[in-house]
Each structure stands twice: as structure tokens, then as C-alpha cells.
Image (cartoon, rainbow, N blue to C red):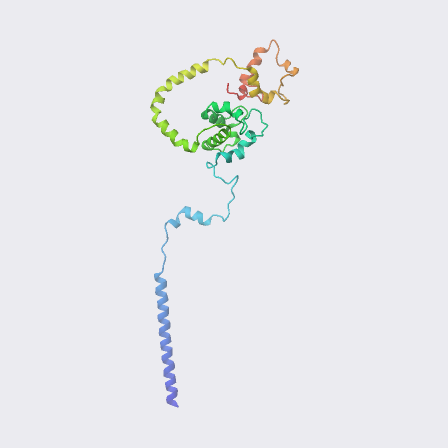
Length: 258
């Protein structure tokens, strides 16, 4: 009986010893594996841009139509800005309507550069860039091309024509530079020559009618006898100077390019 108890005690001690060895080996194995699995930092992931990307808000609010400035196409610009005055059913006077070829024909005949300058700097009652100051020059060209080509024009795509124009300007730069003085003299002579044969009625209908054809307070209306107190036989010369220098709210020459 005593021998049996001794055998059990020896077996239990052996089991405990083996179990302890197994546990120690397992702990050492996991420690070695943990020590050898260290990760090295990625330099690209520590840059400021990467950090900003990680901490940026989940959602972002985009104002307007969501299209970045500079990437808007002609039809999109027309639908947001130009349509207010140039829509096919617009009632704005002297503004060429989309798809009204008769309105656009004389303007298209002036050339794309002239149309672009008018749109860029403003013309008559139209503000610069149609009142959209964030339009880029290229976007403005796209809008002009869209409206003109929808109304009988055939201007090339400004995005495709830009590289060709740059190449042409580079090859022709020397002749253009040599001809610059002659062109400047010609412009000076043209500027010095007074405008002749101007139809006053057409000028009025194109420019003055916007203000002087209605009943705006403080602005003399055409056909109204009350305008007589502004013009008398003794004051004809000073009155003719008023449009040149501008008076109260009236701009010089009413901003007409004549």
C-alpha cells in the first residue's frame, strides 16, 4: 500500500515537472515571437499631408454645384450664370438670346477675341464676367463658345485650340514684334480720327434706352417735355459734355465702347 502511494506521488511530481517545462517553453516561444514582430514606421505615413488625411472630417460641405473652379464646362456655366440674360426666352434688352441666330450673327462676325474681351471686361449693361468673379478665363471662353455655337457660330473648342494657339504665337512672335511699332502708329491714327456716320437712334437703342427709355427717378426720359429744363439755347455745349464726363449715376459715355 505504501509503495502504491509512493508511485502515485512520483507520477504526480513528474507530471508537474513536465507541465512546468511545457509552460516555460510556450512562454519563451511567444516572447521571442513578440520581440521579432516589431513594425517599422513608414516615412510617407508620417508626412503632414498624410496626417491631415487621417484626421480630416468624415463629411465635407461643398458650396455651389460641387465642380471645382476651372473645370466647369460651357453648358454648365450658361445654366448657372449666363442664362439670366441670354436665355432663349429672356426679356433683357440688347442681350443676344441663345439659339437666336439673328441676334448673334453681327457679334460672331466681330470675332472670338472681341467677344471674349467684352465678356471679360464687361460691355454696355453686362458686368465683367457676367457678374461671376470666380470664372477663370478658360471657363469664360468655354461659355462664349457654347452660346455662339448654339446660335449659328462655329468657334473651335477652346480647350483643344489653346495648345495650337500657343504654338502659333511662339512661331510668329518675331514678326509680331517687328510689326508692333507700325501697328501702334496705326492705332494712334485711328484713335485720333473722330467717329463719323454714327446713327444717334441706333446708339440710343443700344445703350441709352436702358435708362432713358423708362421712368427711372432722376433720369430724364425721352419724349418728356420736362427734359427741356436741362437743355436750353444757352446750355447746349455744357449739355453735350455731360455724357463724356458722366453725371450723378450716369457713367462716362454710359460705358459704351464708341
